[in-house]
Amino acid sequence: TGRVGVLTGGGDCPGLNAVIRAVTRKAIEVHGKEVVGFRNGWRGPLEGLTTPLDLDAVENVLDRGGTVLGSSRTNPYKESDGVERIKRTLEENRVDALIAIGGEDTLGVAHGLAGEGVPVVGVPKTIDNDLDATDYTFGFDTAVHIATEAVDRLRTTAESHHRALVVEVMGRHAGWIALHSGLAGGANVILGPEQRFSVDRVCDWVTRRFERQYAPIIVVAEGAIPEGGAEVLQTGERDAFGHVRLGGVGTWLAEELAQRTGNESRAVVLGHTQRGGTPTAYDRVLATRFGLHAMDAVAEGDHGRMVALRGTDIVRVSLEAATAQLKTVPPHRYTEAQALFG
Ligand code: F6P
Image 1 (spheres, protein in one colour):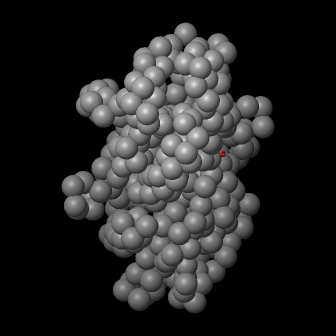
Image 2: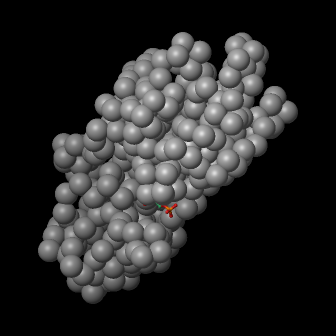
C-alpha cells in the first residue's frame, strides 16, 4: 500500500509537532501505513526532500515548539512545472495521500493541487486564528498566553515609572491575539487591524488612566493603522525581502502618545516570541485531535478536505470553503471591550 506524506508550510506555530506525531502514530499503529515527512513546506515535494517518520522520529516532540519537518513559504504555483514536479515526487516516494499542515497560503496551494488530482488533506494552523472554517486554530492559545504574560509584566514596570506601555502583538489582518491578550491582561486600549483607529481617542483613554494615577497599557496588532495614516505607516506589509514590518505601529504610537499627552511612553514589540516554544495543553490537545482526524480522512480517501473545530467536535470542510475568506474580529467585539478601556 502507498505511504502517507506530511508537510508543514508557512510561519511556524506551537503544536505542529503534536499534529505530526498524532498522524504518524495513527498511520502506523492503526492503519498499518508508512509515513514520510517532506522537509521545508512545499519545497520538500518540489525538490524531493524527504525524511522518514517512524515511531522513534515522533518520540519526545509533542511538547516541542517549531516543526521537526522545517517550514518555508515556497509556493509551487510560482515555480516552473511546480505541480508536475510535486506529482512526480509523490509517485517516486509511493505517496498516495498528502497531509498539508498550514495557514491560508499553504492550504490555498493544497486546494489548487486537490483540483489537479493530488490527493491532499489539510490541517489548519496559525497563531493568528484567522482561518474562517474553524472555530480555533492551534497555536493561538499559546500566543495569547505569551502576550498576556507580557502585558502582566509590562504593567508592573509601567506603574513603577508612571509610563504608558504600548505592546505590539502579531496579527497582520486579524486582531484576535490583540483582543484576547488585551482582555486577559486588562489592557486599557486594544487596537486591531480591522478598523482604522483614532489617535485622539487613544489619547483620551490614556489621559483618563493617568488622571486616576494608573499606568495605561495599550495592546496593538501589528497590522493596525491610524486614521489617515496609511501613507506614513506601512505596517503589516511585506518588504522586498519578504519581511513583515514589525515594530512600525507600536513604536510610532508610543512616540505619538508621548508628544500628544506629555506622558512618558515606551513600546515593546513581542514579535516571534509569540510563535516559539512549547504549546499550551489546549493547543496540544487540539493539534493532536486534528492529526488523528486528518489521518481518518486519508484512510477514507476523503481528499480535498480540511479538518476543523466546530464547537467541541472535529469536522471536515472542503479546502475550498476553508480558504475562501479570512476570519477577522467582528466590530462589536471591539465595541464591547471598550467598556473596560481607560
Ligand atoms: O501568520 C502568522 C504571522 O505570525 C503574522 O502575524 C506575522 O505577520 C507573520 O506571521 C510574520 O511572519 P514571518 O516573519 O515568519 O515572515
